[in-house]
Length: 247
Ligand SMILES: C[S@@+](CC[C@H](N)C(=O)[O-])C[C@H]1O[C@@H](n2cnc3c(N)ncnc32)[C@H](O)[C@@H]1O
Image (cartoon, rainbow, N blue to C red):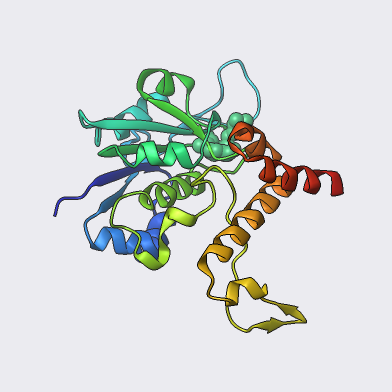
């Protein structure tokens, strides 16, 4: 079977990706040829005697900027006609489950991992199909964001997750957070598993989990609730409003 999706990562720290390549669901997907993951070491494309890849920012200021010409050479070494180029940057569109699903349908994703003050802006203007941020905070490099993206996107490739890991009940699948989960032991520090979950009554369990889902989402992510407000039943709206009133 051919790989469904190829990830090419342009980075100054290729070894950071080894755990992803060697452990867990991504490693299994690579082994099963459902994805491939290769890293491109930015310094290999430097023409500088000490393999430098950065320079002072134009106009002055702190920090160093990654050179557009060197990054371009690295990018061109893996660019293919079907490639979709992602620039990881705090200034990008916020990554979410829907974007992960869209990206999972592509055949080749090239991820640009910045360091220092990031890449020269012209690289993004010339080559990026999208700028993506993983949240409103600044990390030291694009490698962790790239890993988050690779993991999340790979989970949406058909056949990657087994039944026991199915993404269908995960948070965000239906626009809400997942209901809390319980397993063994039945009693933990005086906290019991809700009785209905042990009743075997699937209809009641479904209703209970739906209520729990609404409660946890109303408490932690009112924005998600508001974006789906018209889809809730009268009964569900009462549950949500009760949570909000209780603070
Ligand atoms: C120290 S950051 C640069 C931050 C940049 N000067 C700014 O203020 O937006 C270095 C690199 O880390 C990556 N990075 C940091 N935070 C990120 C985030 N929230 N999402 C995606 N990439 C991020 C980007 O690739 C960025 O070029």
